[in-house]
Length: 129
Image (cartoon, rainbow, N blue to C red; front, side):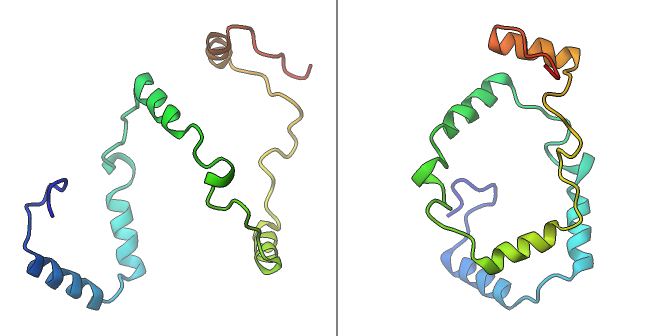
């Protein structure tokens, strides 16, 4: 049972006892949930300040190719009900769209322009043109 876990293996009986105890435990209160969240956020998070290498990013990207496309997408062939559409609409009312006031391509920073040129092999398109 504990092959991939850092915990030592426990017997099946102990596992069942823990499982039953967890089922009977009352749900955590909002204040407790907030404390738990804060204890693992920002600088306290185990990945804070760490970055993925280029090789790792490419490996993740290649692994995702073809996933969630067409029939592989869990929402493929499904549609929102009118009630769900109404809930989404009401939730979005009064919110400003992310692209409100933006027209066409935005000017690139020098760093972004160099990165895009390096990736594409040609200069990026000019803003507003």
